[in-house]
Image (cartoon, rainbow, N blue to C red):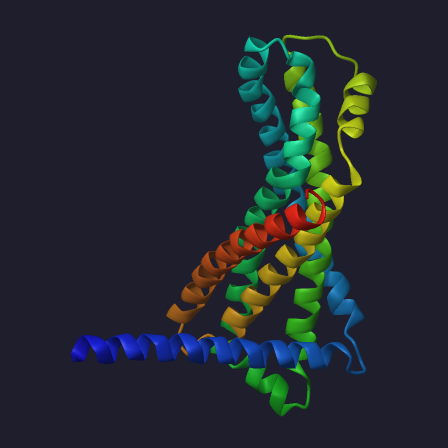
Length: 260
């Protein structure tokens, strides 16, 4: 009996959190179209989220492109298909690996940062002070951050893909001698519109999930300093799970629309 009550309590908490997220999403959506959009804060968040994450994304993408070439080379060499390395790298990097890895990096860096920042503001009652003073904390803190992440994650993914291809080129030239023009031509020729568009669109959803989860966890953190760390940790875990869920759905939709 006690186990059933605990199970019901768990389900009730889950449904209550889903309801809170729906309410939070409604508040976010309504405040997008309200007057007085905080453009200065939006631009600042784009700088903090995009520019300050570019180095981490670039280094990771470069290493990832180089490692993929080094790992794929022995397998393709055994079939006498070393010339397929640029095509294989470009398709795998742009379709799947680049967007997912970049999103996971952003989930770890950005979502945790937003969760901790808003959580500390909640604990120190800065959000309550904004509401008392007549300011709109949802429009200033939430809308700007979610839109900035939604915009920056696709751009970081594109930059990461280019850097990853460059890393693959350098790794390829360890044993071979391939000009960058020929390498780039093979990469571009292997990519279709059906490869780039779905990958780019799902990065928009990745960015929205990362920003939304970070803002929700931070904005609804409980009182106490411990809740700040819990909000940051929960934001990373939840955003990462959402990335995999969105990616699984995107793969199914893409296969239906483009690869019948």
